[in-house]
Length: 131
Image (cartoon, rainbow, N blue to C red; front, side, top):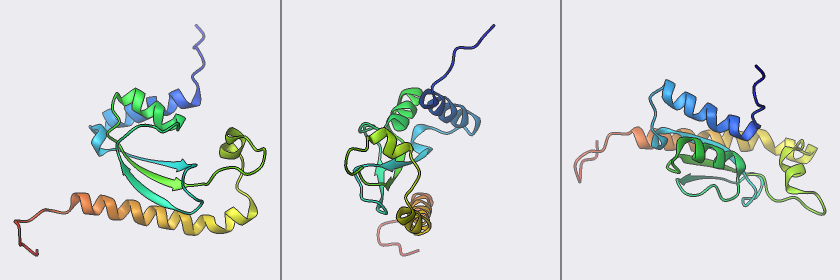
């Protein structure tokens, strides 16, 4: 019996659900790291929940998990210039100029993510408690 092909985006959501079940994670425990056309190349930001804003990979995860409560680390890639389509731009290779920035961008993204995780996991003391 032949299996019906699964689109990569549907597969992404299925993997997300599979790993959430494996590690007993709720959507609030999951971090999605993804590219963002609305941010300039090299800019990173944390977003708590919300819609997919047109991002098919995020949409797949929201649909599969039946929740939009995941934390997202949005890594800016900017918008395509000229007549380049968004699909070709997103799926295409980085230019040599972009590759020069890539290590710094990935380091910044990893630092942002780790700081957020540590901040979430830090114990909260009583008001006025400094330790």
